Length: 434
Image (cartoon, rainbow, N blue to C red):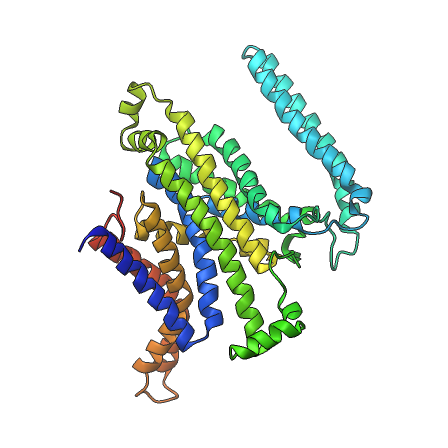
């Protein structure tokens, strides 16, 4: 079997699995798997760019995805009436003061000779900057959060078309990645992993606790969508008639049509990013990155700037994850900072890349769809399996109750088994790098 036939067969198997959900459960569930599979594939592409191309071990994916979700709020949500007048200017001034303090410390460190005088001056600037920052920020935040805290209590966004949030989410993630990369990319791979994970946790902590920015754990709901609302479609006589002619009631037809619209948008983004990633892979830049990945010392001896190339690919891969985060928040129509967990937004994406085949963009897409399908469907399949296994047991059996309850834990067991099987029998992934 040649490579093309093998790849087509693998994607065909995944397509049949998703179609089986449509026939056995509902097409609404099947289309949701496709939509989230597209977003997961985009995340996997970003990680593959970092790990598969350059060998950078980034376990802070969760933070970059969350910044994309923040962009959807700051761009698409309408501004809270009276919030900026109440404390917006104070918040902006405090943030500018904080940035200015950091820049001043950097200049002091550059221009002054090492010694006790420089150390004292740095400490004085930092302490004074901190107290001034808090003096400006805290009263402004309190005034903003007092504005209708049950529904708003935050600044809101710019009220622009939410599709603009997708590239902005990439810019937010890229900016954060640049700051992280300038400080952490000189570290060894294991230290880089620790640094990226820690910074991702800091980003999530900020989103959870800064109510003036994201409402914290109260969540931001009603993020605008780029597709029609189901209720609007159900009140549209032309749509109701068209849905009836296809055998769907208005409610089911509207939910299916909304998901199809999202799938079309997500697929367009994935195709563009896939084309760009493939062009990068086969370009001199991509070959240089793989050379650096395989032997940094040899590449550096040939005159390649290893740190600069690592920074480039780290920023680009993180930007792709930020775009995916903005897309996901747009589809959910809400930002829930508490839902950003390393298991879902870091570990699972890494499993997608490893199972699909690191270094191969097509493999990342396959892994995104396959692993997301398993993540969603393993629990109902596990419940069915446990019911079959315990069919002959008495209804009051403690063992039967225990086995049925254990179906909820099948996700983690299955992810571990899939990862172990692939690493044992196909260590380079289902579609390995050439």
